Image (cartoon, rainbow, N blue to C red; front, side):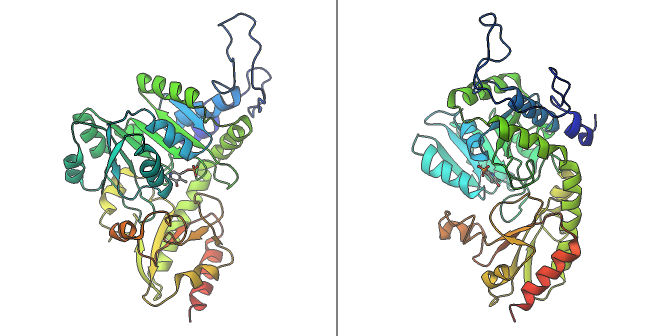
Length: 379
Ligand SMILES: *Cc1c(COP(=O)(O)O)cnc(C)c1O
């Protein structure tokens, strides 16, 4: 089955009880057990039919065997990192999501995990960071907000050669653009609050694996920790996922068009976009991505005020988050990445002036007109 069809018919897309073509929202905390130990469902933290439907769906669309839905992307990441023990070491991408950085440094470090942050585009640096205590490589590609692209297949191979796990946060790409499990990765996760949900109306996270032993481990932790996705949100998420292919088509086309537009603007000094043939990561992006994603970042010419620019847009919404129907713009240094210490931010190439744009699915001419008005306001 092609991915476009899987999005609609994958997982458990019909209610067996009634034939309803939209899975009902089963708002029940517990289930009647006619015979002890034989019930299909017992208690909704452990398993709920609506959540199970979306979990089966995400497993299908990421080409895994088991999916798990959580109350947020952060809950998914927390559950995955709970696999490790005090003293374990993880190699982490050096510009992972700000909230992940905070979670690792302010929660998991306290519990005894250790981390080395590296640029995961540099395979040698990743290999050199691996110690006898290393248990996993954890990364994002493309990264946030500089859209750096790492070679997924090469990193998965490297991890396997060292007998450690490879874990990818696939939020920025979506399964339409890349499917890390097919490239050898062990665990893929998403903040489903972004492209999977797609409508800025649900906070959710998912984890997908292929290996049955890993599935058992994540399933155990999901139930033990209990940061599960509620039935209402599970339904909303599977509803969003059904249109993912259609949405991504529009996102990708608009992004390519806005890249070409921004490249021609004298006010723009630098653009970060994996689909830019001059981008050093272009070859790797072309090899592993279907389309180059719908995020781009750019810097204005020195002296131009990025805050004035973003505050003078009217179609493009000034807001954190990404992956929504509506275009969202933000300044990482002041917003999404303000919790990352400035010297670390600058060392990773995230200038104070950087602007990040999540390109939506509006008519591209309206987006261009809005950006043009924003540039005019700088004069
Ligand atoms: C938003 C985001 C997260 C966190 O997800 P929440 O659903 O907000 O908890 C994790 N990783 C990436 C790449 C994100 O963009």
